[in-house]
Image (cartoon, rainbow, N blue to C red; front, side, top):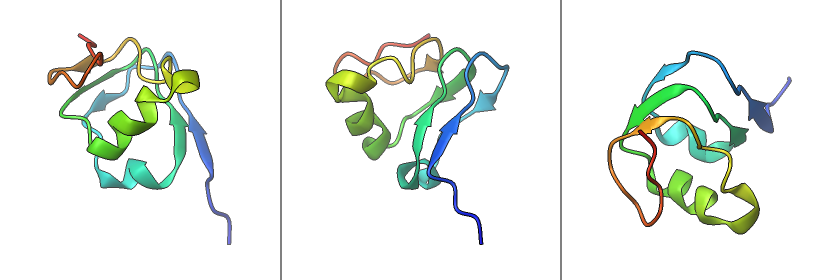
Length: 70
């Protein structure tokens, strides 16, 4: 069986919201059209110093700390 440990899908036109399944994998989804409410585990992952770029360029509508993507 093959298990994903990291997903990198930058610079696409992906749209929608992140659900709890994103908490189970390391990811980089910058520069897409993902929006809505980010799960708390996603926000915690984002707030780590080295991960700040992983959500840039999306359309999140709820502000968590400094997570301002439109």
